[in-house]
Image (tube, rainbow, N blue to C red):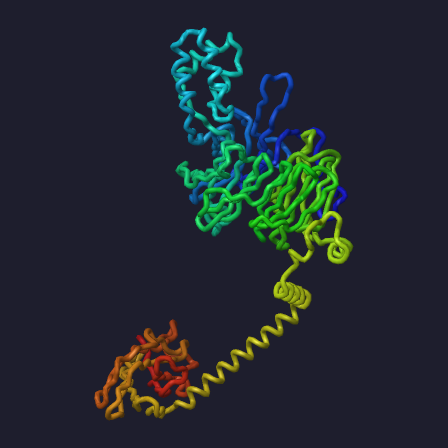
Length: 603
């Protein structure tokens, strides 16, 4: 362990591979479908000798490099998702590069999706129609007209043309004169949105944010856009980070952070973003927590802030160093969601709401973090340092994350200098506190609590059984004695020698003017001795002087070997209880016992 009792440090070999990456370019996936979750990382090469930076998709088993895949560009994000429900489930790796999303299945190219192009300016289209046909001397004037347009609204080939020298422009124009003039945005952020949450690995959709301010949701099974939104109505709001919670089929929320410090909220029913809050400095991290649906952000002015969805500042904490990246740590076995913040200098702090509950320090600054199931372990924290070293820490099964008592006392009584908001904002309600205390008592006294529950359960069962017997015994008669209803008479007749019998019941209305309605006949017998296919029958209205006859099939249960009645059957228990009830009443009108004859053997 490296200075933190809650985390076990995994020792690495000296020759372990090193990578240069970001948190958005790390993911975990069972790519081989063998139950072993592997680490996938986009290693970005910044070698000064090469003309342009390159990237490679690397697959690690544990900390050993097993496979590499050269990427055609620098990715903005990578993620692993399932696109269908077919078995066996095969994950797909999505890599966002420029305006495209590359899909890899079984670590082989599977599909390439390109986001729709935007309409270009009329002036730009007119310039490209003239450039191939006019004389070279007229090119500077046409290019000057392009410079009058906003640079972000120009197509890529126009932007590239303006950067070239006069000698290179002629060849560039002849090469790209027939290519379409379209403005395509770059994908700057990507994450997954589960379609449903009923399965452990449900199919997911991809949420894409472009530098043109568009928020797109891609359904990867058919590669169709199922949602299109805008960060806001301002053209200058360029997304930099996104965070998503919810499911596509039910409801979801998308939080978008822009480069100018604004944070916007989009919903399924509101594709136009609403500004939640705006900070004066750019953000280094953005999270939408799943439990309390609060928005967490870290800023470049050494702050860790929490806002509600309505833009209310809940709390903010001053950090001792600039934050580099943040990461949510859902600890489902503890019922907690922690926030890990990597600070410049190598310190990683863990916060539960506003309270710091843990920390550890590395030798150098952490550039990227990833948390989840890795290998065969469920709670693994992977960190990548500035030098490219991969550090792995495993959460101990006896870990505890609790605020220090002095921190709680300072915030509640004297006020903490690092905390701005009132500490009572996120205090548990009274009912929640009572529930938590009761749950703690049940854990401490589990045996006594279970015994007390069983005693109360049997007491309820005994009371219910005694009340049922009393109600039946008080109604034992062949004529109903309820004066509020028409008096009825019940008679029974058993036909047959066994093992199949036919039980005939005759219901007679003894009233001279009142009709008996809403009557139900219920039969009850010991299942070890008799089998009754239909135990309940709803009777039609019984008119005065017109008897109603119903029949039931009763089959005696015989021994499977000798085809004789069981030895437990005797004249005292060879009975069928018949109850005539009024719909909506618990007490029967008539409760009678029918003595069944001895069944013959079935040879």
